[in-house]
Image 1 (tube, rainbow, N blue to C red):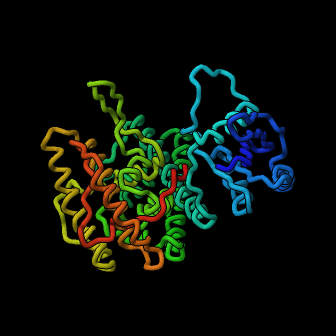
Image 2: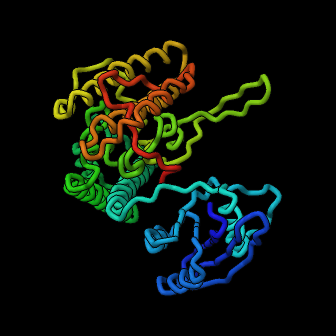
Image 3: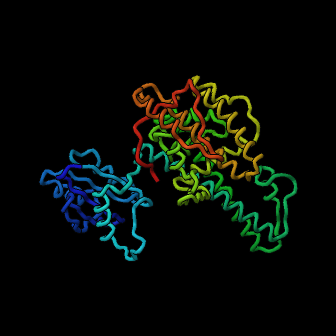
Length: 414
């Protein structure tokens, strides 16, 4: 950083922004600047006062419920840089028991100057809108499941069981409509529960149709289409992955993508003692759920390629075919070793992300392909990745473009 750079920490809430500034090292002080209203006009006045001496200004604030409006207002200005930082990666002292907006702003300014903060990837407005739509459908799915659980629990308390097949099919729904109860309160309650279930299911269906309608016009539609070449991924699951991750090519290696989604393994090692535990489960739980659902399909032996794969180029078809055989073989191998099914499926989901990363490179439009100078760097990184006895990063097909990469981001959106 230049010596004349001013570092600014912003602690935002719904109504106000607390501002703290840090002068450059070695003798620069960290001081509380003041509090302003959280609106565009107040931010403009703040920026003019900070930049009036011609100094470069670096600002940061924590990702949170206020969104990216402040970032988009500040981004792209000459001499101004704004970072949205990951709250979970902010260093904190274990002994601190006092938290205020003023202290948070001072800490952000101090850590920003020390380069101890991790900036996240900020999606553009179109990508954020698609992500909100996909998340709305996920909420609708949760509402449907909640209604089903409430109806099932009520019928169980009444001793009513459905024995004519699988529940929650059209036939089961017709059977629910034929049930009669002696108590008036039960009749009213059950009617309202069925109405809530039908409304939630209709909302889920509408949002699914909206996603199917808008995905073709999305800038990342090529990636959603390409990922459907993998077994277990259809339009909705592929859209969930892409909306949360963005373009996987911003990760330098597949291992970084796996770590971002929390599919790495916890480790607490010291000296000769090596202890590894469960999955870290950081990042988007929606993506982990979509991957786990897709990974369960690899319990069955490899099948013939999907129809969607035939619409892709030769490199994507080769990667999908390799994933089809390798992941099925991987699941059976882990189960034979005595691993639980859910552990084996998590391992397959983690390895599946390597194929997602490779397909993103192989299917990218020609104008978005990275420069050839980065190929050797990424290939060396893949060779140097440490192998795990349970979960290994998949080797990419030799004729694919999996070695290519785009300039990586430091982190991804929460």
